[in-house]
Image (cartoon, rainbow, N blue to C red; front, side, top):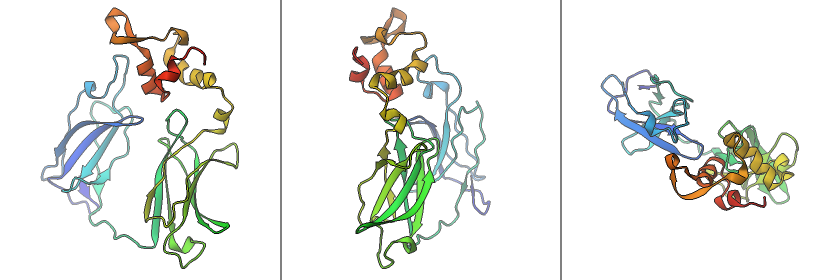
Length: 261
């Protein structure tokens, strides 16, 4: 663990996590020694959710200050090996906030709560009968976007902050798939998280959406044979299929249990 000037950071808190679609599991934590070195050990039982799961954790390491605030985060190491080396550089002196700089960020999700990767996020400043584009970004594989803009971009230069709107666009059409409400007098950092139904998903029936999500998980198992026993006991042939699939796909249990979709 180093500062940006390559000076080792000692006695600083480090935590390792397994990153899942909608959550993170703590794998362990430690503090760095006088050389900035840290080592966190964890087991497969901490991140594997079933006996069929293979591979390593989707590993993220974060660094915390004395107030337990995150000051640095590593990139995600997908399917981590049994031993990984993750060096993290921490800014020695974080830059002072610029009152003329603004940021809007967060994550777009699809109808099944999965990340909407490759979507176009656009931020606008709204005034009476007029909008000004502030910036646009394409979401990453986790559906995350981050758009920065400056006071000079406001449609009226004398304003202190934007009346912010964020819209989501897909590749197939120039029409927005979802939009936020107007955030009047937006703060320097705003979080806008939107749920999106893609254009191709609008024309699919509920049954088609279910098949699209469930078929890779079910294999040869028929949807009509799904079970939801009171207790799960694999050895005794008792299964909670609906609970498992709801967690995997984002569909609610009532929808998965219906026989008429």
